[in-house]
Length: 139
Image (tube, rainbow, N blue to C red; front, side, top):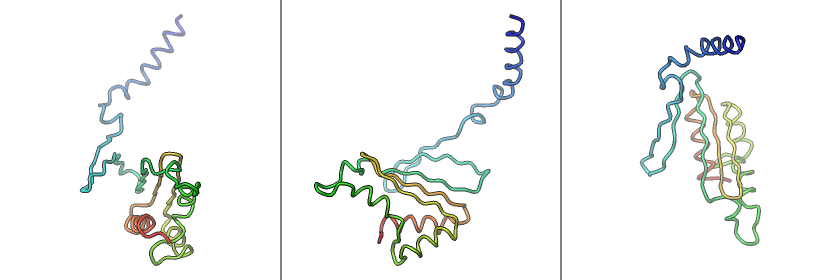
């Protein structure tokens, strides 16, 4: 019994600094933001690491929406969307990603289509330009 009490006091003592922090210090500050076009997103900022990481989804754009006779279209799209865009062929597009350490991926499920982008903040213009090209002018 004394060991349990001693263990409880030790845990309480060790946890006291965390419990004394304000809620803002203990939890992520999640902000809801809305684009000029009405797209809602959640933003979590942490300026300790110079990385931008974005995940997005197009709800209802997955394999369930593949046209009749063209099953696998959403999967094919997710597998090839980063294989060149705009005036960049596949090798040039992949080189631009690699040269700037940009991680760009797409995936689809039955119901949704997903994408993710991770880049160093100093390469954000290149990263978002390549993402824009992939989504609006794929080859």
